[in-house]
Length: 255
Image 1 (cartoon, rainbow, N blue to C red):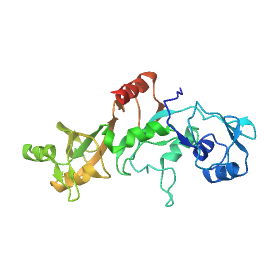
Image 2 (cartoon, one colour):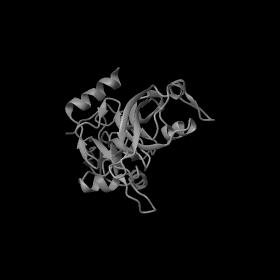
Image 3 (tube, rainbow, N blue to C red):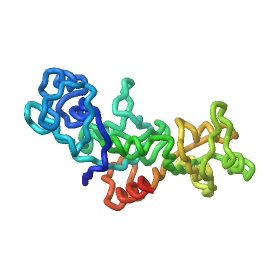
Image 4 (cartoon, rainbow, N blue to C red):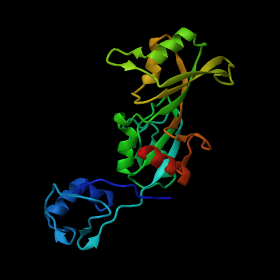
């Protein structure tokens, strides 16, 4: 399904590019040449900002319309880079988007380390991307973390109070022991799961936070981003968000 969230003002060249008419650089040339119209008038001002859905933009008299907004969830497997291009030739999210025939412009909302796995939200809605990823909104992300020894209560208390990382203090919103599970079936070693909920979240923060108090992470899985979870999705799978899931995001955004 597609839907249009409320959009704020957008630079004219970005709007033209989002409509698929050209790149942003080429859009500037279209504006300069007088081929772009805004609300029935030729526009040659690069600084022009328009409101999608309210202002009319044309190229050589033909109305330009934004493509429908798309929202997906993706279970990123381990070993996949959260980017659309990698000069070193590693597997990327783009491979999975291409496999599903998902249009250009759909990008991940945030990142997961290559060695981590789990939920990524994907969209071409710039407003939603900004809302999901801006640190000030502190949209929760929930992780299951496998470590190789049982965490003592004192260490759990240290995590909950915050771990000094030098430049900042990493403070989870919650930390809970989940119990022993096999690390893998081949050697049957046991490890132990923690469920950790983060607000802002930084690159490799959970791994470094646990390393700082003496624990090695064997596996790290993001199981939720805000109200959206990995329920009913398998590694490598991309699913459209349902009406219910989109409604939950709307509700969180308005709260």
